[in-house]
Image 1 (cartoon, rainbow, N blue to C red):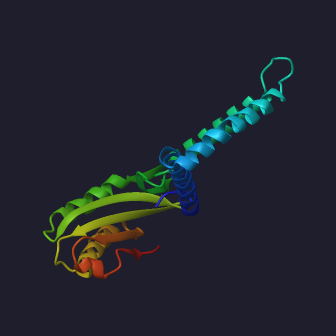
Image 2: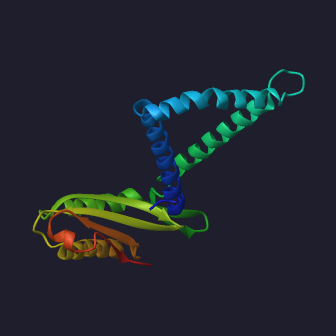
Length: 204
């Protein structure tokens, strides 16, 4: 539940994973396989000489420096910028405002996400059938959504637990005067493994 495209996430992970796997496999092969090691020793000087020769044939004006190095540095800087942008986008779905309404022409009413999170957490902490719980708020395409993650004790019914969480959310809706979209995630215990782990409880 964040603003980063899921396909982009998976593509980046796959590409980085494959590159890491290939580099690791190549290093292991060079270190352990005599045939590969001999081939590397034979080809490495030729490859190095070809790259060096290319840089020498592409001088930058009369500076004696190849413009190819500038291209390499620019590519590295671009990769770093893209990686930083990708990293900083992670988790940006988390939100600290639950409701914001323009109640008057001179002001607005803002309800922090912590109000709902603490209220729900307080209610869930009093339930013996719950082993652990976590509540967070996200901004999903401009819509504020609550996420309630609950770990139930072994032997407890996840369906009944989801209904109890629904009742807590209904009480919050009554208090706020509107329905807040929510995602309930139930995990833990043998019986909970027999049902869907993640379920969308309500939509606006």
